[in-house]
Image (cartoon, one colour):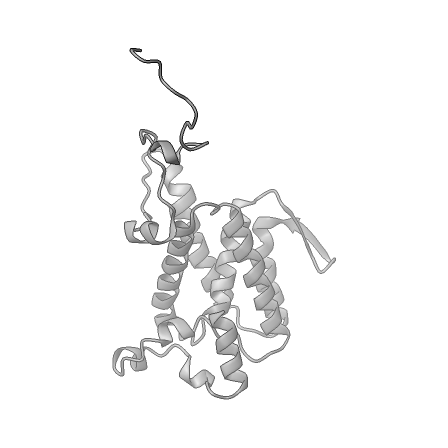
Length: 218
């Protein structure tokens, strides 16, 4: 919803890319904090590249949410925050002004590594296993004349998250470094039911035991 509103404002020229792009000086010296978020929401003017990113963002975000993050909304949000934080740090050194495409590639990378046996078909031309998808997209981006720095950043951040979350904890002596903060779990996850909880009669299936009596003296 926020992205669609932002897109509408851009088309009406109420907001320009110059008000959205990532600029450390404007963020830290002029306190334009919104740029930490808005640089992820701009995918360029409407065209093939824009539609391409929108389709992949929606598709793989949805598949992750309904797949490996099903019932784990807080962990899903934490992945967003962790990935956005790393991209922002790396963006300081590679002079990238918009990180939305890198974020999309990160989602694609995480999904592809968690679904290694899925067969993919790219425009009916290439058949390959899912883990190769981010690299195929990077090659396609190169053919379109785009810089692959953005794709490499998304792949790098996606790999860091996948390694810390899925690989390292399962290694001998490995530990889980990434832990979703309790505040996110309190906000986004439904609390687990207490197995020792004894519900009141009106909360039990069927409600009160109307019509049932007890024998006198029993």
